[in-house]
Length: 178
Image 1 (tube, one colour):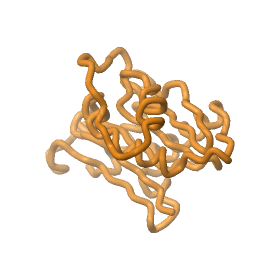
Image 2 (cartoon, one colour):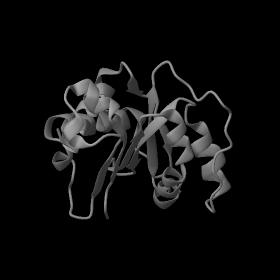
Image 3 (cartoon, rainbow, N blue to C red):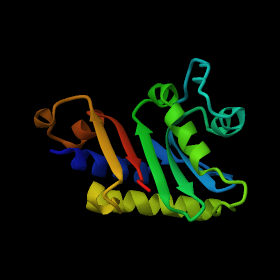
Image 4 (cartoon, rainbow, N blue to C red):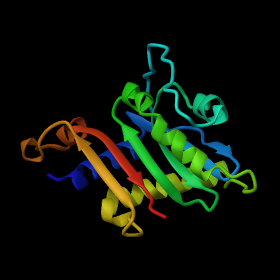
């Protein structure tokens, strides 16, 4: 079993909506964020979000608007292209590493651009997941500068069933190169 197999199982899991599901998109000028939430689970401890050199607006308003049970996000630009897909298997790990999301929001936030609609953003996130489920990472890579990584908790050779694939995945990251 490979990292590609893990990603396919994970995409299927999000599409089923039993353990993970897409939440209501957050729309801002030039960018839409589609949160991926863990069903029936929230971050129990109130944690101060990491401070970065990025604007207070991004930190307080945009990141602060994410649901408390967010464990991943899709970030789409004003053209509707997925510029990033980040998912951690635990809510706490996502929030510990929120600075990546903050940087992407600042990079793509443009006051002069209208965001795509929330319905369109959700549809594009579903299409991305379907392509990922059917074709694996190769199906979503559109240029040589795109980045895709799967962080594992166990060696690849030690896996068997699809449940093991899901449990052995720690995080998935896709970032479109420009």
